[in-house]
Length: 542
Image (tube, rainbow, N blue to C red):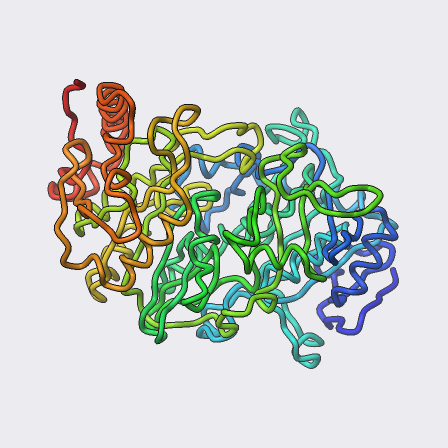
């Protein structure tokens, strides 16, 4: 086994049971990873500078193939069920043995870094080691996690958690206990994740987010699936909660505000901090006019473009093409952005925005939530999963993802909701519900709310412009909606008026209200009567 790379840790991969691989590449810089990825046929260089890689049949996450390894030390903590499926340790041991045999004589790539921003309390930073078969997966890890730049610290780097991505290893469900040939196995007790059967790089990122969602709350830190930025001062922080495709990255990339991070954060007693060192943005139909900063990263060396169509002769990109998937992605380090806080740390939030992509087209585009409504909608986590984000999703699908991130929550949702409620009350944060979905009808009939309108509404909310405006009360959902916002047509603020047939709107609104009520039944015995009563009101259609 040969080692190559400028910064090799004294804690070698032998400690992970890997003893007879080929060449082990340690903490390589982007240019060297580019070279190796291209030499190995893992990707191609686009005309503008990024590397373009394909993920094969898996163009999104595979949540049904993710399992939690059972262990007495975590048994009583875990929210067992559809999200956290139990996996027996002996089955993991069998797959680990197969993985070690699978990489015999093969090259491996190692990245050592952190989950947790540079400026965060060191107690809240997790040293992570990412071991991959592919050079481009190692570049992905380098982009997405916080990099250690000190050679002496890298030489003595001791991982607190290890992700081993054996992407080309296929499981045998009958023998290995998996659901399919794909597996994402989280072992919190042994502090490791084993991934196989998928080339989709997002599994690496989200597995460590699941890990942080376990450890941070135990330290009194709320872990959050949100983007974050701040205004003129670091005390003017805004959080944007939402599932992939609802606008977290787009709306937090504001030229008038400083980005903290675009997807994963912690909220400690000192304020908000980024968990990551990069961004993983959707780029389908991205435009230089609508999202200039993100667009520029698709023209930059060091960016990985996943499943973006690239002309084989000219190597020109076609960001508008969904021929491979709707879930085209760009992975890039925060250093590629101009208006970003590289320390990844700021104060406590003044504003919290819940993003929902309403495929029914009935929710108001923006509304101010009471404290009780905030808890109701946080536990509900209503949105539509957009095309391509997960395997098998080809058009928006209504879903309720508690805490706006159910697939990544090892603990019961009440843990995160309770912490959010306490912090909102303590710091007096205002909470808004923002619909980035459809207007004028449901998906297939109406159209997405214009990004320019959404940006204007966000600016109005964060600036304080909406604090004392006159509102109307939505009869279906009990939401306080501004009567008017400069730059937004009044009709857009009253979704019923955008439908050709108001009776059709009433029917859809009643249907969605019923879905909210049915979904919330599982939380009713865990919340106060005030929170139970804060949900949508059912009204008779017509």
